[in-house]
Image (cartoon, rainbow, N blue to C red; front, top):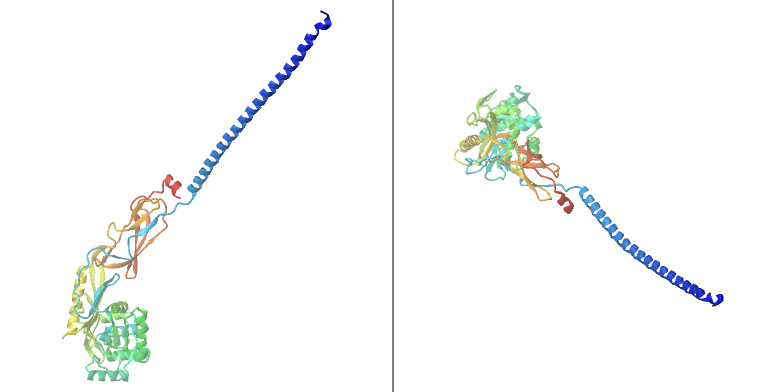
Length: 446
């Protein structure tokens, strides 16, 4: 075979080799394309996983932020629920008193308050107890120092006329004469001890220039003293239009007895005056059962009346009782009213004792928190007072700002107790520990 023909098969093989090469290249391209697709598919799955992880991270972050916000919010404070009203009673059972069965009466312990009253609270005639206000106004306008007699007061014609007319009508009057002068102290003695109606006129004319102007002063003084059921129309009580109540008269008696000159006069059993001579006090109880005054009164309209003060010592402390008995319409009204006052004083002094202001363990309320805990609050360290068992007292509880964590015996507030205008303070404390809220409660309830 010629060399020319021998080369053809080689050329054909070369052509087939090129085709094979192209096929191989296509295969490789396809393989690479598949690989690229696989890579692309792997990239899409990773993105999804990344998105899920990111979302979880964001969720956890949001929960954490929310929890942090809730944790940082202020905790609502506990609330105090009082179990104490505006009043309380001294420990013990209130004893009964021998109150009169007719008329009206009231009794109070100075510095503590009322021990009770019976009968009507409507104003009634008070007869010569009116002179207590007459003396009170005079001494308010013209005070007397201890041991002094005060200025001289000339006896005028009106006083002499009142004496003569009073004598004719069987009034309670004190003998006077033209040209006579009485010191202020002597005039008050004549007014309060033998109960001279004409001396009431003398003092009214001297103080205010006339009885009308003086009566206006008496009513103004009654308003200042808070005697809302008291009204005066004359200076002696001869007119039944001068009225009051037992409760009002106690306040008047306390105010008058706070004036040393007044207390000095009403504690006198007798007095000697320039013209009238020796005169005896109508208060026959004076000096008995601690009674140191104040004023009796009697007439047909008022019956027997007595405004009195009695003093005694209980557990080393001076105890002062002020009482009023009115409207005793008996055959012997003065005797009846004096006996009633003595029995009231005796029974009251027998009942007065040294007692704690607040009973031991007295619960004034509870502290309640929002997470369901409640602790009692008690009055602690109560002072002792000399008083009447069962005596009602006015009380006010003042609670301070409460925290969410309160220690055992921590002071919660102060209990203010009113002893007839004088106040005592008693601390109120938690009886056990009030803990703050748990972490779970804070995260789920705030």
